[in-house]
Image 1 (cartoon, rainbow over the protein chains, first blue to last red):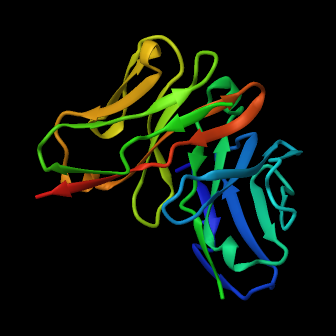
Image 2 (image 1 turned 90 degrees about the vertical axis):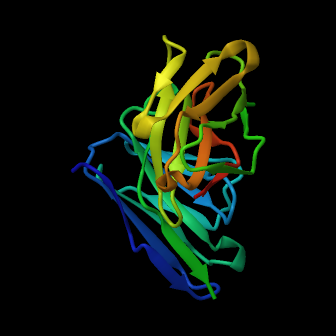
Amino acid sequence: DAMVIQNPRYQVTQFGKPVTLSCSQTLNHNVMYWYQQKSSQAPKLLFHYYDKDFNNEADTPDNFQSRRPNTSFCFLDIRSPGLGDAAMYLCATSRAGTTRGETQYFGPGTRLLVL
Amino acid sequence: AQSVTQPDIHITVSEGASLELRCNYSYGATPYLFWYVQSPGQGLQLLLKYFSGDTLVQGIKGFEAEFKRSQSSFNLRKPSVHWSDAAEYFCAVARGGGADGLTFGKGTHLIIQP
């Protein structure tokens, strides 16, 4: 089945230690998104890629970066995680973007714990 | 800027009873609206979406939603809930104005009583 895969499902890191979260998709979609969802809150868009074009949200901290080496993979890098970065990180894809009414398909998420 | 309001943080419904989850949006043009469901520790699953056309939208798992422009609402309904429907439900609107991505409401936590 075509799907969005996130690895790992759970990630524990230490305060200030860089961490990378991974997302892959078999849908061959053009757009890949990263959302941050803190406990009992709504998902919040961090950034997205349309093909190779990177689109950062204005309020996304500089501590968060992303890479998309090819169509299938997208990575979220947190350079120096703080306690406030503990959250569920959701990857999503869309064929042509929500501006055209396209659906976003979400992965199962990676829960990040910062010690 | 667009926004989504889900006025009910928690809703408790008896199994077999009907359900309505409220969603109000703020958006200047015709919105693209979505309902997602999230089970504990899981990602988001699309229930249904409104793009255009018929204002009553059918989704998966027996859910439906009605787009009412005059009330800026997109309420989710189900005639008879099952215990497996217990989850968090998010209403979302496509951001529009050339900006990709979704703006989500804060969610409604659905509890099913036996």
